[in-house]
Image (cartoon, rainbow, N blue to C red; front, side, top):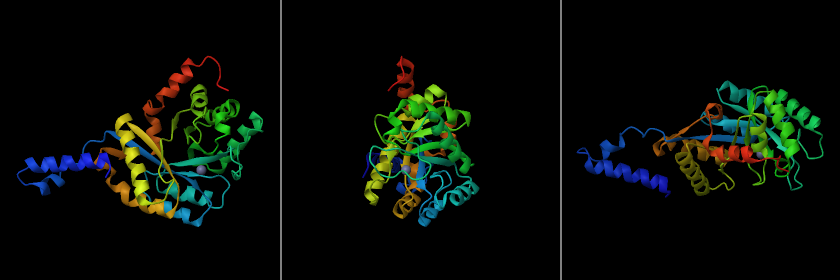
Length: 273
Ligand SMILES: [Zn+2]
């Protein structure tokens, strides 16, 4: 049992001890006021017909859609019709040789090509309000491509969420310099598909949100993940956090967990290489 769950149970038992009506009355106590927000993005959407299962998730859960994939337009449209936030999941070059898929940004592109490819991908998904990177462990470490990307996002009024596929990513600094609202992924929820692993990751996300005020988790449209989230997300408010759409998170004046990156950007006298 996680510490968060453990603490909440303890509170319920404690309240029950002092309540004349006992535990039954304490269970009906209102949920605590939220101490933080969790934001969940399902990315890699667009290739598999089972991706449509993600439409069963609460509408606060964001979809990030791979451009030019067979189901991209259809699922972006359906998700948007549900009132759900839609993002563009933009493929970027990785250190590994794995194919990134269509519309990928690579390190051999001129800045103009980075801009053009990004613009085309945004045009293909008109509902997208922001972008996060698909793969990108090589490209997000490179200042010039990130600068070209962020200038384009600024021109199109989009925010950026760094998926953090490498600890050497300079995407956040580049976004801050270009004036693009930015935040980062804190937890990958489903690197393993068994329920106890996913529950542990969700507990981590909740703990981070309670500590910092907000936290972002990324998951994928695996049927196991969708099933797990559908049964787990209904009870997160018991642990003092609210499930919050990414659009709402990015409207907050500052996203506290990205603060350190802001400081780094301020103190850097030359552009990171
Ligand atoms: Zn991805």
